[in-house]
Image 1 (cartoon, rainbow, N blue to C red):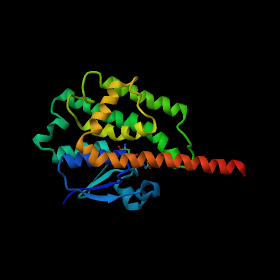
Image 2 (tube, helix red, strand yellow):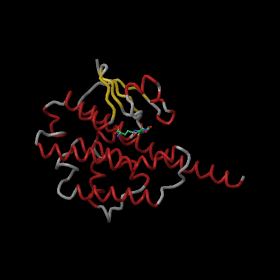
Image 3 (cartoon, rainbow, N blue to C red):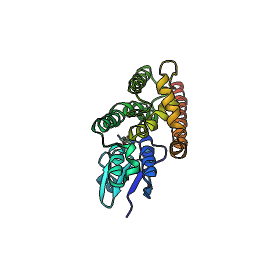
Image 4 (spheres, rainbow, N blue to C red):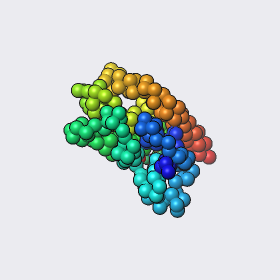
Length: 230
Ligand SMILES: N[C@@H](CCC(=O)N[C@@H](CS)C(=O)NCC(=O)O)C(=O)O
């Protein structure tokens, strides 16, 4: 039986898994979760994924959380020789891809999440100065990673690019990349965004994510103004 992916199209890490699954030709079952309604918090879901995040995967009783771990598992299980460019055997290339995946997991996405959590929690009305500094610092690191290769870990697209493009699609929407400061990052962003798989699976969800964050910030501002007048 095919694996089930618990996901939401608006979630960046969920879209990374969806893109990789599509490239690998996996006919997975989709289970829609709305994290804003905490639908991932039922006892059954918590048992499957104690992290309480999406995406997570249930492959016939084998459960796995975190998009990066899921992408690597799907590649290991379903990757065919024609997919080897995504995660080549060369040890150094693999190590570089791993580093970029850990970078997305441990550095870049948490900087986006630090905007998402207080926005959806009703507190944030605009991105703070320190949030902007942290996001810019992420852009600086990506610009440096792109100094010798066209893509983040190689001269061909790899799992690293599919992971980072989903985080970057929202970050760019809420704090645009300055192409004068980060020309390589801007070029990479346009190049990866133009890939057919990104247009098909990443684009709409990313636009919805950016729009919802902006809308929530506006609503938070109105609510806080109302409260301050009482
Ligand atoms: N490192 C995780 C991050 C997953 C994550 O934080 N997903 C968000 C949605 S985009 C979520 O489920 N948030 C709910 C929460 O943190 O409680 C991954 O790559 O899967």
